[in-house]
Length: 223
Image 1 (cartoon, rainbow, N blue to C red):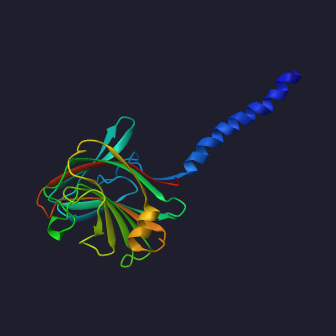
Image 2 (image 1 turned 60 degrees about the vertical axis):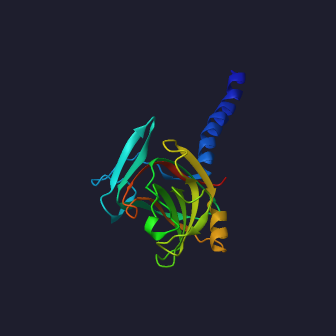
Image 3 (image 1 turned 90 degrees about the horizontal axis):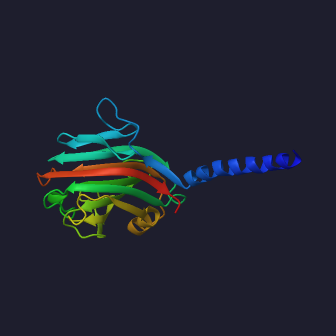
């Protein structure tokens, strides 16, 4: 009996340690989306807000294996989904996400306003006020070369980075990981304030064409 009693504290410690580990792992990342909570009456994923710019949005949630992914289709339209944030990217400097493009807008190229269409875009806005907020955007382009940077023709306070370009990876899930803290400092040459908004967009209205893409989970991480 004495030997059995001496093992009880050790057993409890092992159980507690196994419970603590997942919590610590969760503290290393901040999940932004997931799209597994369902949709509202308009078909918009819960916790997200629809922004319509031109044409009719086509939004679907589709189950893929054990999770749900966001499916966007643009037919000569422009729309997106936004979600409020309050993240210190000095603490969580990496943005992680996965996306898949099915169709690129015909001749899309952000370097000219008349062709500024992309099948998949993610933007992070920094600062409190809309008119002074600075934005870092990541694009899946058609014509602009991969890793090129530039200023958005739609909003001068937006700096863009092309992460993927062209049809080479069409139909394939691509996982992205960027040090957005470093990206902000290089693009704006100053320390970033807190990240206040994330946006997912698709558009094809300038090129009068069609675009289609998917988005999976999005999260910020410490490393």
